[in-house]
Image (cartoon, rainbow, N blue to C red; front, top):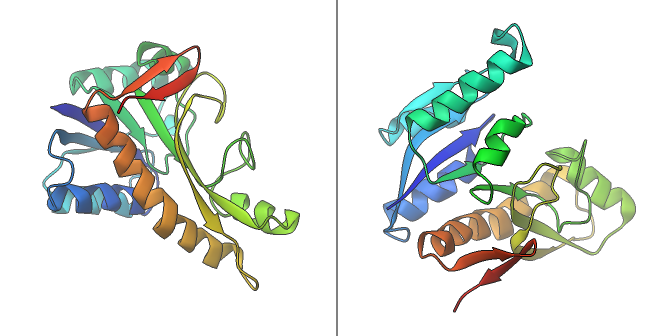
Length: 208
């Protein structure tokens, strides 16, 4: 069984995509042990509670120093003995101690085709605003492992989405979620649960 911690900050639509797949039996070797939010008002927490999944909140502002936050966060994850950490709209930068301890065991879904429109400052609608202002014809989403950089870890899966004439950042965001993010995030987790994903020289190999 692949035990997950899903980290969220907002509505939890990617979490819901995972829950829907699990409800349909499409992720038989996967369990969500805990959903951790950086925002106590995140609707994602309600989605987790509706599925009887334990929830926790951790907010950097509640700690006097970054070191205290890092230790508390690290301890929280260790308490649940998870195999894989899934960043599903998590807006905090993970402490380096966590990134290093869980090397190649943290994945993130990003709403662009990395290396386009990624890195510091590119999140949420900002990604889609940038794509539209640049005039790209194709965008999409990427699932990648998390390393010590920002959106620089090995890429697991990508899926293209066409930009349509008249798109707004909001309509493009919705289409990227529906046609890419909600598809490739569960698929990446399925492949990992089947031990089909390997990282060699910072590149992902997916075994048939």
